[in-house]
Amino acid sequence: MLKKILIANRGEIAVRVIRTAREMGIATVAVYSELDRNALHVRLADEAFALGGTTAAESYLKTDAIIEAIKLSGADAVHPGYGFFSENADFAKTITDMGVAFIGPPPAAIVEMGDKVSSRKAALRGGAPIVPGTTEFLKSADEILAFGKSHGWPVAIKAAFGGGGRGMKVVRDEKSVQEAMESAQRESKAFFGRDEIYVEKYLSWPRHIEIQLVGDTHGNVVWVSSRDCSAQRRHQKLIEEAPAPALPDGVEEEMGAAAVKAAKAVGYFNAGTVEFIYQDEEFFFLEMNTQLQVEHPVTELITGIDLIEWQIRVASGEKLPMTQKQVLAARRGHAIEVRINAENPTAGKFLPSPGTITKLTTPDGFGVRFDGGYESGDTVSQYYDNLIGKLIVWGKDRETAITRTIRALEETKIEGLHTTIAADLAILRHPDFAATKHSTKWVEETLDLSKITSTTGETQANSEGLVEKNTVVEVNGKRFDVKVWVPPFAGAGAPTTKTRSASRGSSQSATAASGTVTAPMQGTVIKLLVAEGQVVAEGEAVLVLEAMKMENQIQADKAGTIKKISCKAGDTVGAGDVLLVIE
Image 1: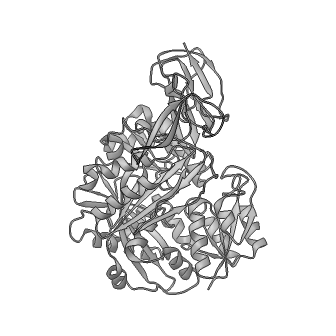
Image 2: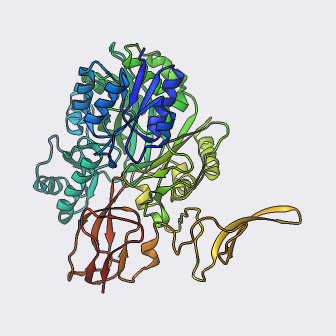
Image 3: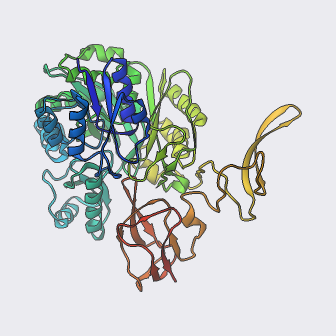
């Protein structure tokens, strides 16, 4: 059995690995950037080593710094979590060549399956149908144009070494190809350290179904469960559930068998996920993620299997503790996972919302679990992924799981920044979700989030200068929670948070149609799309702002001429900062 594990990651997944390792009597080593010096995963680990730097590229993707931490700590294994180095074959080979166990698949399998292009070839060898697309890396925009003309628009440009919707751009016409390709490459490089891309047909109304599998070094591979991950925005998952509901008899088993064949074809071991697109009672191989997925807890809740423990045991050379028949026999009930992200879902925009968590109260109760990477007082930085935590709920059936998840979400209180909770509740309460009529495009194309509003829980001033305060009153002995608007003042019972004219993330709407375009969130200016003196139309994109590894196009709030540009590419701006002026 392994003795000491270094977790080459951060946030909730690092916390998750630390907790299982501790239960197994294994020492843990955390690594951290300058911004994560006092992060929860650092506080929980037995040891911690500084990587230096601020951004992921300067810290968690800095190979030399990670290697040095391994040597200094004496760790005999590395768990990469997900993202960062989890699907990096060069890193895995470097680790194993040092005599250190890599808690993941063998480098050769990462090369073939971690690269989405070669994994499509492997799927074809295994007999699994694939979504029409290229089986080579793209070299120019002309190849995308040719594919679109041949197969029809829209098409999807994807990161070959990515996943989770990062580095994915949907192109709906010829004129958008060049910008979409460049954006996909930038996002892929920022999140995965590589910018190779490919293109495939974008299906009209698909569900996203995936199969969790685990293999050992003795040739055994089992599929553990299916998951439905169709509730998405920006091609990134919001809500996942296991098992995938409303599949015709035998389809889940067919997917599971196809996933196992694909894994065995490349000598795969440890945890992995094979993703499929399902539409009109047909499924197509999409890609294989050679890592532990963010949504793995829903599989754990319906099986009772600790997938982190299985990963560690496989990396220690042990055989899988259960056969395929035993795994399927252990499954019971239904589980739902809700990703709670630092985003402002007001009006369905899902704008990044970095900031400090002033209050974090998690739910409890039968069948409720919360996997988090932050506590009250911690800061969610613009430089990293925006996942605050995951609410995972079990129920005896899907209906029970849905109602229990709604109850638990209503109990969850996060203040200091915006979160996706309001949108998550809208999804779970919708009859389409209950009837499994949603698809990967449903949130953005069908679900009406126009009236959704989000607040940070902080005191805000209205147009009369009054501040909002929540308080408790009793009327005839009955308690009421009420909201009142009062003049700002100091003293007992006064609001303790800073009064501001608008909530974080809503500064642009506060100056709607003024011609003064401001940053809706803290971020980095990636690219200016206009120049001073240029005429723009209302709604036209004027610059690209990156926050939390997502690119956001900032638009002109009215038609006119660009009078002044107050920023340049590479600048870091704060919420409310003036970016440019239109007259």
